[in-house]
Image (cartoon, rainbow, N blue to C red):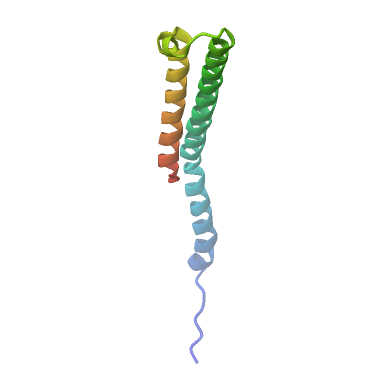
Length: 100
């Protein structure tokens, strides 16, 4: 039977390795926070765009006006741009986080 003695360096290496892994984990935090910020911004923009678009359509229907001229309405264009930007941010954030 062979008995191996632990050297002083080996016993100090394990806690150091754990600290290093912990440090590397902290370094990844800003990227994760950035991804969640992009997803949240996309969700907010898409929600605001959809609500604004719904309000424009509701107003148009309440006045008993046709919906065809609504495509050239400035509020409808703003709503479409907000919704599109929000959906692009949501899609980009989902691809970056690995969720499709």
